[in-house]
Amino acid sequence: MPSVSFEHVRKAFGDATVVEDFDLTVADGELLVLVGGSGSGKSTILRMVAGLEEVTSGSIKIDDRDVTALPPRERDVAMVFQDYGLYPHMSVRENLSLGLRLRKIARQEIDRRVTWAAGMLGLAPLLDRKPKQLSGGQRQRVAMGRAMVREPKVFLFDEPLSNLDASLRAQMRIEIGGLQRRLNTTTIYVTHDQVEAMTLGDRIVVLADGRIQQIGRPIELYRAPINRFVAGFIGTPPMNFVDGGLREEDGEVFFRAEGMSIRVPHENAATSKAAESLTLGIRPEDLRLNASTTRAEGGPAGDAFTGRVVLVERLGGTSHVHFDVVGGSRMMASVLNDRLPDVGETISVGVPPDRVHLFAADGRSISNSASLPS
Image (cartoon, rainbow, N blue to C red; front, top):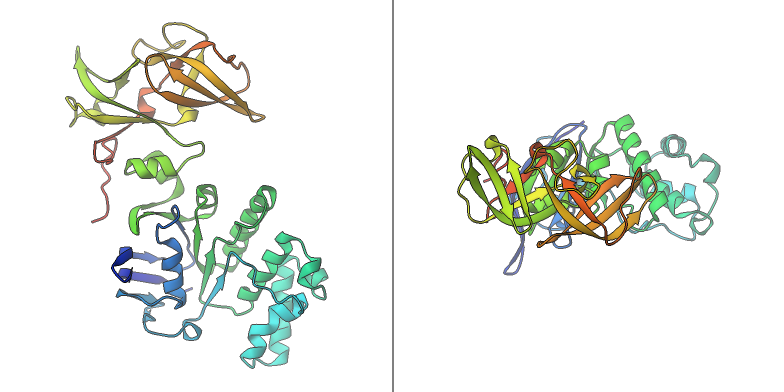
């Protein structure tokens, strides 16, 4: 399978730059996910690969072939859009085969590819139906099959699941991931949904304002976010943030904010012991709730603070407990349902020091040695 290389790609519309210095290589057979909010440039990057948008500067190579100036039909890529784009008057079989028929592929070869794709996607019993007779998930499979029969070098997915309901999205994530690994086709997948990114991607590129914020495996972005933006974007529910500063007392370093004093490992704060303005980040699933006490059960003093519960969201196996730090800001903990506090109850919240993230005033992480791409 071919690789896809971006070499300092930039895209501007007039005076507005929407993609800036996008530079990376998608490995052979890799599923790379581009994730970010609206306006981050992710769909524009995909459209530049497909040839639907011109590159302002830089170059794009597919299988070491420069395709920057080539028209879409000469790039050997297949794109699946958010909109299924099926012809309502055609059957599933006709929708799958249309592109091949327009390219004058031999009838026997068309039949082989359509039969193969239909078998892979579970569409064989539906080949004679019209799109209006299909569910949303089945229509998305047809759109995927139409791309598959072209047997392209690269698959491009532009938010293909955003029109589906939650249960279908979960099902289709599994199917797309399994299909990509069976076909081993180099794939670039665009989404604004970080759950899709985390579950599908071999690697994830987090984008903001057209710039790469961080590239890495899903677990790397979760455990070691490079800045506050990535920390808040990756992870469900999102990370808690509290503004404060560091103080050194009796040989130990503490993060102090209104209503809390949290011990910080030396390796996380060695260069910032006297920092006046920092942000602490802690994931909701890393917080420990205990009965109303002055400290967390089994935890040393300085690793807990108190809060007052304002909302409990019961989600089945887990619940989200929203609470106000006494004298400080609002936070949320994700906990098991063994013992849930009541609204209005004062609780003790334990914080494992090794799960704390620290961010400098400019948003950069000082909890790991990674750095932003230049």
